[in-house]
Length: 319
Image (tube, rainbow, N blue to C red; front, side, top):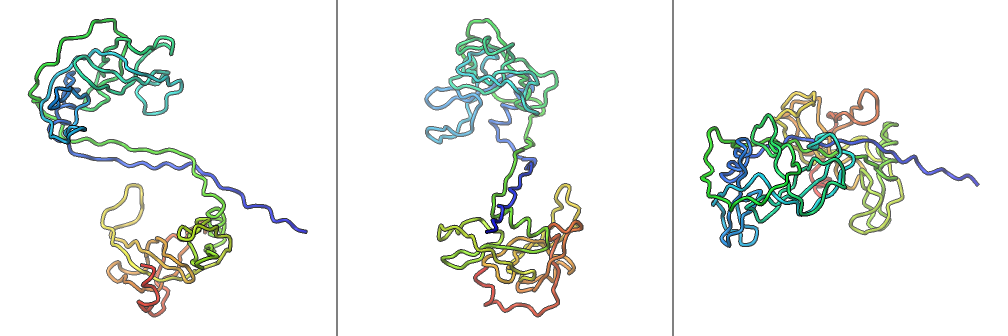
């Protein structure tokens, strides 16, 4: 008896990152501008609590908050965790403690790094102070870190009008997710078939829908999809959009068309770029075929197949 070995499970590093841009309201603007000026601001709630970092709406009552107050640059550690191996982009390059610090005059704690020689030097209740960054631009990183500081609690917070010269009105934060992705057996077989210029899906034994790319199980019936089915290579544009904004590091001139394409024999549509035709001539029902990448591992885009458009009734369930 011949036993077929299981397919190799693929793994690859994957990085998802993008710049997140947001405008600031009066509370966040004052807070970040204050950090640039070495001033820490909180906001007072209707019950008299001082929240640091400040928020624009009371988390308990949803009331709008605008009563800014200045709190101290010293505070008390309320809890902590040691970080023995700092990662790129973290506040310090040497081992440090993540700490929640209740600044003097505040009722809530601020998360940041504490520069300490080791975990034995950190304890709940220890007194600390802000170490300001040498170059400050109006961001949480204007606080370089906290450092141990033996002092008594400062006085009560004082009112602040939140006014500064040249206030910070917006921020750009880089969001990044760095991890190792494993597609699993079903998608591994799909990717290996693409390397052979074939598109393979899996059929649900219950409802007979063919999933491309395969998921290993039917999300509707909840049963495993083990029967492999080769689909395409041609298909039908079911719907599409015209892209007018050029993506970073993407060497494609705008405008271009990104479409849902129902490959012949598939039970749902997949995504693909449409090329070889002016963007304003792409239409629902257009019959297309794949144009493979230079290394032949995946379809780079789809182009018109030279066939008559598909009738709407043949793909309306796949929109």
